[in-house]
Length: 42
Image 1 (cartoon, rainbow, N blue to C red):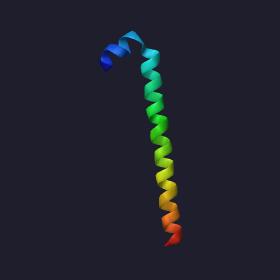
Image 2 (image 1 turned 60 degrees about the vertical axis):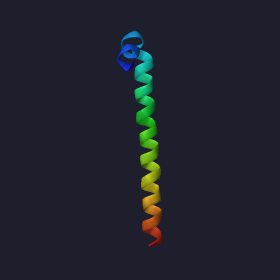
Image 3 (image 1 turned 45 degrees about the horizontal axis):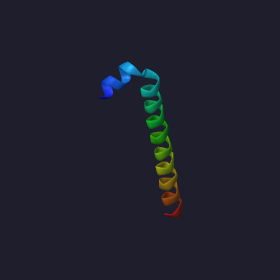
Image 4 (image 1 turned 120 degrees about the horizontal axis):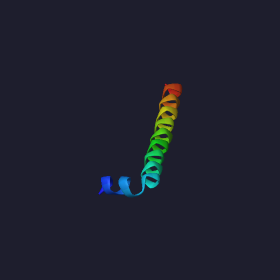
């Protein structure tokens, strides 16, 4: 199904990939912030 989407509409597939990368980056930033807060408390 994913291969079908990528061949028919590569722009949509690329947008989904970019969205996933952005979400991962935001989650990673939040995780790092949380770690620094915990280290600051300790």
